[in-house]
Amino acid sequence: MSNPSNLKYTASHEWIKTEADGSITVGITQHAQELLGDMVFVEAPTAGRKLKAKEECAVVESVKAAADVYAPVSGEVIAANGDLDSSPENINSDPYGAWIFKMKPDNAADVAALLDAAAYQAVVDSEAH
Amino acid sequence: MQPPKGQATQVVISQVQRTDGAQREIALRLFLFLMKAHMTTLKATPLNAAHRAMGAKMVDFGGWDMPVNYGSQIDEHHQVRNDVGMFDVCHMRVVDAKGDGVRAFLRYLLANNADKITVPGKALYSAMLRPNGGVIDDLIIYFMTEQWFRIVVNAGTADKDIAWMKEQAAVHAPALTITSRDDLAMVAIQGPNARTKVWEVLPQTKAATENLVNFQAADCGEYFVARTGYTGEDGFEVMLQKEKVDAFWYALNKVGVKPIGLGARDTLRLEAGMNLYGQDMNESVGPLESGLAWTVDLKSERDFIGKAALLANPPSSKLVGLVLLDRGVLRGHQKVKTPHGEGEITSGSFSPTLEKSIALARVPNGVAIGDTVQVEIRDKLLNASVVKYPFARNGKGLL
Image (cartoon, rainbow over all chains, first blue to last red; front, side):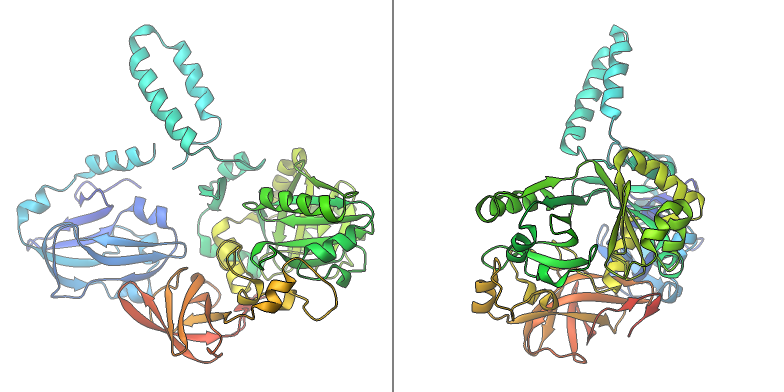
């Protein structure tokens, strides 16, 4: 599965989708879910929480490991995906559909400055060597 | 990602074939690659290529390049509980102890009593202790004849185990020979249909192995077949010459036995309540604090290495099972808060059979089955119930 070109990415393997109203939706990439394996628990941040860029704000746990999810930019959490409480495995089957949380960024320019699909692929490739 | 074994050689060849212009860049890349390869040189079992061909995700497991899963680890777990799967356990070490007095030597060397096994092929699980009572390793011994016991030890501890056995033999049984069987490979076939599948591939072993009871082995010439395992399911562990293991692995696969990675091996053994050396016990704790009291014979007159220390230091903690009541996942080294003091999780994961998080934890003696304790996970205290383990065996949850 290639990384959708309409999304932005971070070097810590989050994907970011910009919505029409300027809010962003955040999840973890195909590469990240594949490294972690079968997902069994997701702890998402609660709405209203203020986040700084690169702050640890969610946890995804597979059978074999726990991994932190980082805020891609500074802003405020506006929603968490409650479906993942009962079906964390959705991240494995549909990583770009199973979003973890949504936030309202402080600055739209911060989102524009994130990695595009090609730059993220370069990060993945460099980790593999 | 770890570079597969053998790649370094290929890089050297490609460098020689390059023309001068590309030489400098290639030399730099080669240097960086070799630096990395040197730091991460991993040992490979004879099944390494087979794992890769079967789509395994490989990881560094105590210095061995091993398959962690071939797809979904949870599917692999259920595959073993409900049907059959096979594990590459070639990294574990087979040791043969041969000669007069081998039984008497093992009676002194091990915390469990070798005198318990008198029927040929019968196996015994035991801890091997330092004089201070610390656990050097846990192992299985098979009584074959009064001249021959076979021992299977863990991969990561094999060298120190053998050194210790030889050191003790030199003093207490100098006529014994202790041989590391580096010529042997081992495959574990586990699950309710495991034995049937092995007989399909090795019909010549059926007569000698169909009447084996649990924890008993038969030496079938080319194949040493033991009804043992590390999953809580029925099955065999088969030892054979290294050169033949690839063909055996593929033959099993052809009759429908799926490969299972170390990921599922860990959740299977945890559900079955089986200790993992290095996590649930090590040289700094004794067997009585590690849930292994049932394997330590302190009642007989027999002396063994570590006995005096165990008698002099009654344990103040014990191993119990935990089931997480809140949402989350229990993991090794998380702190356990109890009214009797603090404890620690030694092994924790998600149980695919129970669909809950479970753990083994070392807690103060006062903690009782049925108590609720708190586990510190990141910045939260989550509730867990203290339970008797095993958590699951023979296809079923036991809670």
